Length: 65
Image (cartoon, rainbow, N blue to C red; front, side, top):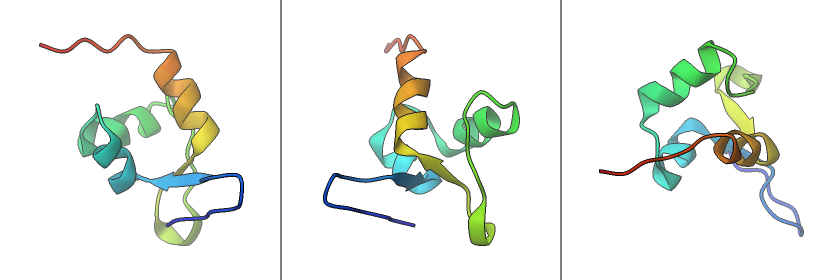
């Protein structure tokens, strides 16, 4: 589900978050389930507000390797 404006993207669905990385689908659903990542489910599909995704990522240390 994509909602755009002249300013930019407001919401991401889970598949778009997976494409951006660094988390896999199951991990994103787990973060939603545990309340670590704010999300809503309009029309039966989980979506995350862009500002909530950015806030979530800023609060995590991501290590590669």
